[in-house]
Amino acid sequence: MRFKTLRKLVKFNHALQAFWFHSSGEWRWLDTKRLSVTSLNRLLWQESVPSLAFFTMLVLSGIIATAGLLSGSTATVIGAMIVAPLMGPIIGISYAFSVGNRRLIRRSFLTIVFGTIATIVSAILICKLTGLQTLTPEIFARTEPTLLDLLVAIAAGAAGAYAKLTPRISNAFPGVAISVALVPPLSIIGIGLALGNTSVWIGAATLWIANLTGIILSGVLIFLWQGYGSLQRAKGGLILSLGVVILICIPLGISFERLLSKSKNRQIVRYAVETQLAMVSYDVRSIKLSERDQVLLVEVEVSVKDQQQMTAANVQSIQFKLQELLDQPVFLRVKVFDIQEFSAPVGIEL
Image 1 (cartoon, rainbow, N blue to C red):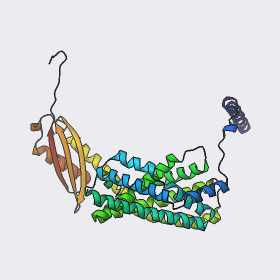
Image 2 (image 1 turned 30 degrees about the vertical axis):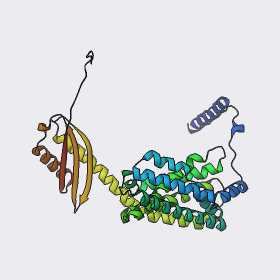
Image 3 (image 1 turned 60 degrees about the vertical axis):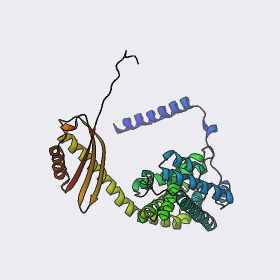
Image 4 (image 1 turned 90 degrees about the vertical axis):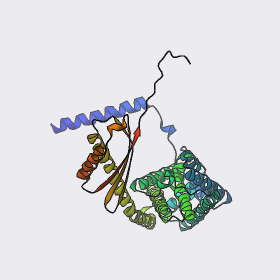
């Protein structure tokens, strides 16, 4: 019985292979050839040069990113990512780790260090010259990094390394991904230093270190997977980058746990509001959570069609429900907005 089943599986496999080759045609001539070790080595050496063009483009990217962060413009921040030339020296470090090239490590490392300083200084100058001191949501979003940010950096590093090996893949797309992970944190470090806000620049610095090490680590793994270098030569670089990633995972894990807790509490708040306002026509506009001295501070904005439907008793019932579900003291503030509806019937002439 087992031999019959095995023969059926073999026949099915042969039939599947025949179907694939018959349907796909001769595509082997379209296969993408990888760069040779010599070509890749020459390319990364050239892109790791701390040239005037590199610093000019990086400083301009930092200026654009800083202006976008201070104004809260997401589109401007994204535009800065297209300009930044950070992909070359960072992928150069990954490649240098995989082949054990110490000279390329030093060259790429110095380029990144000088580029980092130039970006931070440009952000400080822009912040001082404009006089803007408002911390926008674009800034706050990058001062509390989590494990999700590290995951983005690892994926960006893998994409960047693989793009370098495959000539048909444009370097622009993974280059933007790497810049997204690095340029905004550097600009926020400069903003935090200019404003004297310690929590802002420390949070951004944590994000930058996590992103940099994540990109380098995944880049090394991609190069080793594709047969560039060897595990023996890359052992030192792997241990260093993996050690930094493990250390940085501690604060990132704490932030991620806090994010999960806040998300769970937000769902509980919404559930409590829906339960206690079942008889009221309302719409929840926003929910803000914070914690102080073991007390959960909850601020809910609600739109209702008739403000008289909302009473202090409703708010108190929501508070009791929240304290029951969360098992902790809750300070609740509910802001009520009146919904006004207007209609324009068809056929009315002005």
